[in-house]
Amino acid sequence: MKVAAVIGSVRKDSNNLKLVEYMKKRYADQMDIEPVLIHDIPMYNPDTEENAPQEVIEFRNKIKQADAVLFAVAEYNFSIPGSLKNAIDWLSRGGFVLREKPAFIVGSSMGVLGSVRAQIHLREILSNPSLSPWLLPNNEVYIGSVHEKLNGQNEMVDSGTRGFLDQVVGNFVSFYKRMA
Image (cartoon, rainbow, N blue to C red; front, side, top):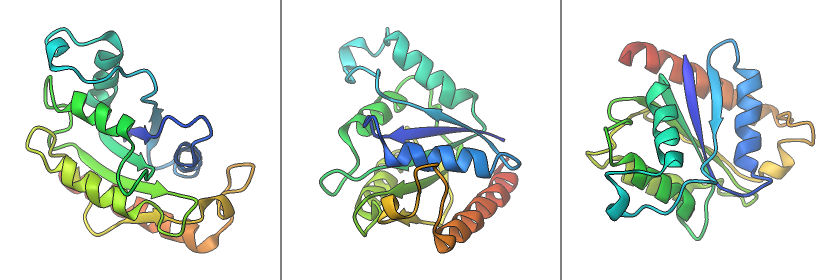
């Protein structure tokens, strides 16, 4: 299964990118995870919707060609980063590339809540009919204090978090097989 992992932060040292890199390595036998960066996506502008910028076309194609999507979301001011909302706005136009595509969400933060409020907001945004992926239900991944759980070699040193991620990824693989 080819998974496009949308990194919901443009931060150079993104903890969510580190989390996805960890998942890519750990779950390589179950899924082929490709991190998808959103750094270069220009601001959504309805005036350019018909002739979308090349960066947007490439972003949409990565999502379209994937079998599934993983959203790795940071939390800024009780919501998703503006850069992620912008990328999703572009996905909501031009071909319904997310519609009925299996997806799941993970998130981490240095705070204790692990992006819970951002993920609630992201689920609401993704429920838009022009997006509507098939989101894995009842498997919320909120990794708080991530800087204490991922070490400098990008290994998950917290056994509880590691075990929980193993369970969620297994649940997603089963979910994907049912939906495909």
